[in-house]
Image 1 (cartoon, helix red, strand yellow):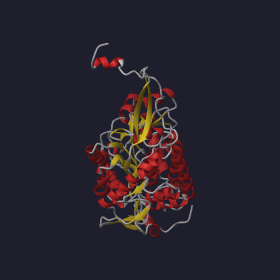
Image 2: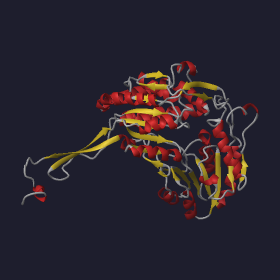
Image 3: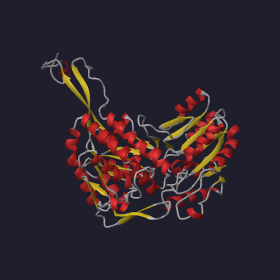
Length: 504
């Protein structure tokens, strides 16, 4: 890990990054970033107001002609340089991410930061490989081809659970395709988004291509989404807020990409490897302290394996070590805030009235009492229509329910409004293949749950939104497809004209 830089010194000029410079916000209101492991202040900064959003959009608009006019190779080279800068500063990025989020340093170091570097390298290559229909004479008398063109200024909003990765998922495909961007990170966790923009400048990207406005959703976020010079909005967050974003964006006929909530099923058939399923369930439900929209939240286990699965998952959860995010022995850090911890605890306390809390279900005391910690929690005996089985808890909580037939298991897996991710556990190829076909989710893993790769798309069905992050599919979101058609005949009076005037 690199040196632990002093956050207050790094952002002494403010937490807005506009046209290549840090500056203070002009809203007249401040916000404090808090270390959720200790409750200590990390940074107090001035929030963005509408004037800051206007300045950032104006900077992006000025930068757009030159950046969109650069060759794919030039944009690719810039992103390769950015990947190198991120790799050089990997230690600082990991430290800052753990400091503001509370996630264990081993997660930041081994997942968040290398994943972001890999994403950057991927889009550096993808910038030179825009896909489209081959040019050809599809009508016989004309040559047609497809252009992919940058669409303009993108205004994106990223969440607090993976601040660095979500910033990269928004920024990289947009700028690789030749757009410029204004990103609003969550006000709770702005540090690594700002650092990412600074790294882009170090890599030689022109000022104004990447801008960061750090403010709250109702002021900065809504003004950004509704801004007349923003042509596209990409939002990751809750389904409820996504509906509001959609209302504002559609009122101004913007292109819209939404990655919203999830309630991922973890479907265990009776021929699954029980030990693999139990280990997978613990890892997939507790990653990032459960603050992951693809985390396993509902384990449906075929009845012959159900009781043993519950017992084994509880046993494994009790071995998970809570502690200082920067200690190498820590497995689970705090939630992002005390408010989020209390929200999760509320779900569990209400569940005690209709289900069994098998393990966990409490905040630890002692040295961890000042932090936003919550023990890994397993709930059994809940009904399918219960709150904990239907609502996104976004914490270290796994609910286990039994099923009897394969038909029932798949039906239960699909029985929520969400459809972001799912997994199926079976040693039977045909059984697993059926699950991948019939579960309505944007990603279905088989005998694993959580891994993502830059080459493959991420995005949901149903109330989990639409559109794709990562992969070349993301260029469908960030480019305008134009059909160009040339006449090849040089004939003035074409045969088709007779359908409008004259005779053959």
